[in-house]
Length: 321
Image (cartoon, rainbow, N blue to C red):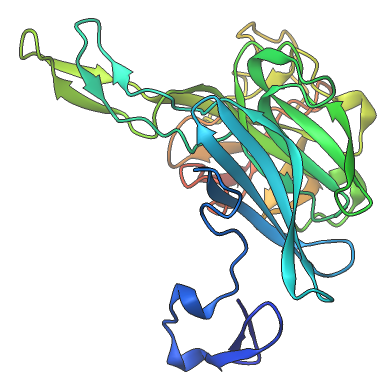
């Protein structure tokens, strides 16, 4: 369903009701995928909805059979048939959290999330372009050691795709790509994602079943990374330069942890999800440590506003030097 002029409509433009009549039920909306419609027990998981190159809505979702069988699909509205047409995009690989976390004595915590996939997103600046995270290379169908980021070009409304790797041979897994909207120049457009440990969506304590002692389960320990989309020299290839966002701007380290000898104090600034050029500044973190990586020539990425649309813990403020 969609909202226009204070009214709510189905995908075929038929009126559901006035916005003040909300809430509406699921039966009021247009079905995109009905569980069991393909004769399997696969479950869909919505990842994103944006407008395509033709101005029509495009829905991206994952399609899970079990923890080792997940695919990415896109659904496009067909006005002539008044239905959503589903098209296979790529093999998403394995579930991100196939099992609960486990302590050495077997105590478990956190539960499994076999619907969780690496993520798929549309580039709002180029709606024929998508980014995915998967531990299967879409170019050849081969499994990879880590979840990598790939850029796909949509051909003939999803009949086929042309793929290239954004990351490869990564030291850590790469998840949930996203392209923030609002850049004023093509050279400032970026795709971001997070990399590192992600065994659960929670961290927490639980008493061990063997001794009763409190044990800390660390489900995630990750950092935000990314690259400029339209700068060919800035593709990440196994390594890139990252920044720990703290008041000390001299703590830039390599992607694998090695120190960078010389600092280049230029920056790109994400301001209200728009990327703009900047001069010199530092960041004061107000939430948690979030290193970022965009390019080898400009390693210091500054985040001015909260990226709550993508990851709620990524909140920082900028102070001028």
